[in-house]
Length: 150
Image (cartoon, rainbow, N blue to C red):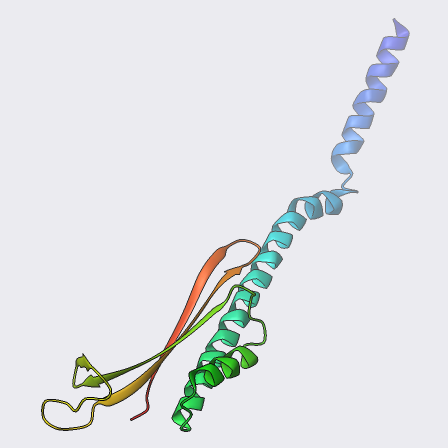
């Protein structure tokens, strides 16, 4: 019977000491916070990478627009310039360049004069698109630039 009382007192003393002891609390707190910090960091990296990709695409579209504003007319050369300036283009990225004319707000053939006898306004439309996949999302991004060339 004596042994039971001794063990009970020792156990109570150990439990009281354990309540006062805070060693290891930092490790427990870190174990709780570390996954949240990691996910937040991955989210920031994900958004930054997507912003970099979008900026690169936008720059490539503007480069194509600059080519046409400088007087360039060759569509295949313009596509090569766009693809060359798009430094991080995915393999399945598309570049589409079309030319069209308008008489006022109405589309018309480029080789026919407008009803009022004026020359139709000529435009070039550059469209690039790419599926961008990040850590948390997959998104199809499209940039369009329409340039009046005449």
